[in-house]
Length: 111
Image (cartoon, rainbow, N blue to C red; front, top):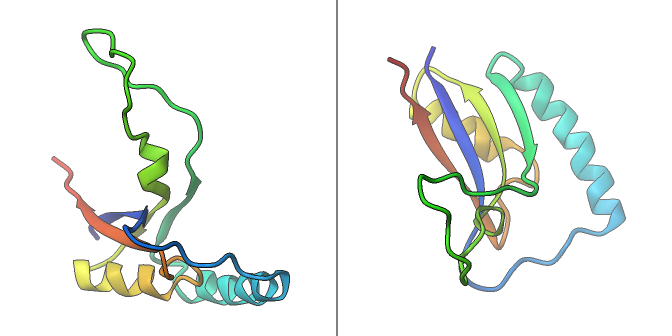
């Protein structure tokens, strides 16, 4: 079955408000249900991105570059029969698609 990279992205415009502790607790409960429902699709739940550095042939010049972690909040890899099915899995993940963020779902092409 094909695999898909799901990137949680910051969207232009105003950011959504952070959930309250009660909302977070409810979201974690729903997250457990989501993991159980889609366990056959979840290859790697990924996580948030931390520090990194660009590796290039020439040393990168210091400048006002946008860091990947400012654009991409996290990732996961899902297995699905189609792009539409992978989108359904990502869309159903509690808290992943919300005001100020969305998910880009990209097929991973293997040789």
